[in-house]
Length: 409
Ligand SMILES: *Cc1c(COP(=O)(O)O)cnc(C)c1O
Image (cartoon, rainbow, N blue to C red; front, side):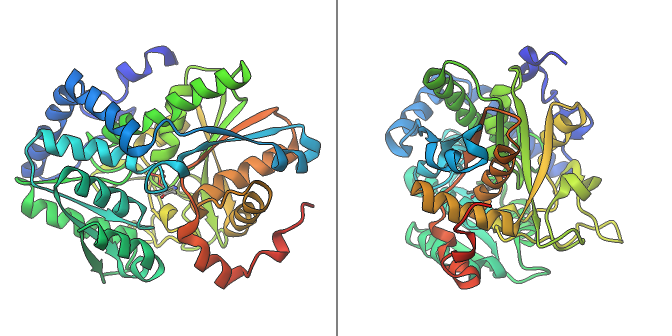
């Protein structure tokens, strides 16, 4: 495949990445998607929108975020044959990559004259990012969150409320991300005339996977240039964790046309059994959920299966359609990291580099550390999608202060 023209061809006009993606919705919602799509294609490419977004990224978000060389960590692993680098999205305002697409979506809502933005959230990071965008743009905001996540992520719930957002705790089913998506969708069906649904990842019906990808590509574009400038060459491997797939696709796409190995890392949770992980690329099959066709974990009745990971932000049954496509054409590989691997990486980065990573990002770092130990490549760039302050209480409750993760074996 010719990746130099990739962005022109993917997605297609009807939102397809190969046979993945599309928009599976009732007719009256198709009209709303058309409106968003047309607005996106015209407004978001206007020079006024582009320059306003550029200004916001610089002055409000603090971009560009740096690329950082983990010298001490790298030296400890496999005799330092492989060097690990981080793209520091944890330093993005609000502490994760999600603000990248939320500010884009908020600006689009503003340009369209909408009064209200809504969304679902898992770890609470998307909720905080969108609540931040709502406050910045002066928009009303409602966030749906599974009751389990509300309990697990109290500080993020508090932040959303302080920012002036209405947080709705969803008590249905597993009470996690999937139910929150369903509830947010139901709200959108009722209120789509004055509301924009701001999806939290590269999932959902067209045009969301495209829009969110385009807003997140700033990560890969910056990282590619920064790494090249710092080292004089490109990394051998780039890697990122995959929940819905937004931080990863944002990093990956700008490297598609380069001789760089690309690896997405999914959560293996506490084991291989259905319900014990959220490794949709490893165990999932093709199916339609939440308005798009992709790979997903199904139960025995073909319904979205329960999923689990220590990182709530990775708890999602499916994966963005572009990932399903990029794996099928053989350009991107997908691997896994368990809860334990992630916690090990969480403590090691904290102790050896002074950076406490989000448990989500720790999955990608765990893969990089495993690969560095094998030592078959010279450099790995990891997207550190978020900071770990939100995870600190949960980690010490379950693992103490990480004595057992202190040493390298
Ligand atoms: C939400 C989140 C993720 C997972 O979402 P993607 O869409 O797969 O990027 C990863 N890391 C952090 C810190 C998050 O908040």
